[in-house]
Length: 96
Image (tube, rainbow, N blue to C red; front, top):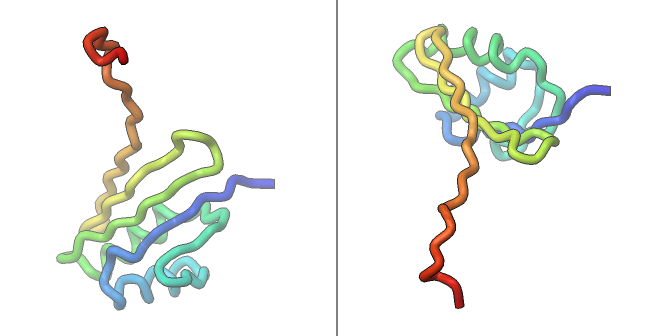
C-alpha cells in the first residue's frame, strides 16, 4: 500500500521547483503534491547540491494525525524539523 503525504515546495524559486520535479519524476500543481514520495530526502539533497546558495524548503503533512514536518536543505545538507503540538497548562482563572 504505502503512506501518502501532502508535500509543499511552493516556498522555493521556480527554478528549484522545476529541478525538484525533474529529480523526483513527479508533477507538482502550484507547488503541491499528494503522493508516496519515498525518495524525497535524497531528491531534495541532490537538488540542493545544484543550487548550493539557496535554502530549499519542503513541508509535509502525512496521513497520521500530528505527522507534520519541514525539511530544509542547503548545499547537500539536510535538517528535518518535526511539528510539536503542545497545550497550555490548566489555568483555573480562565474557567467561565
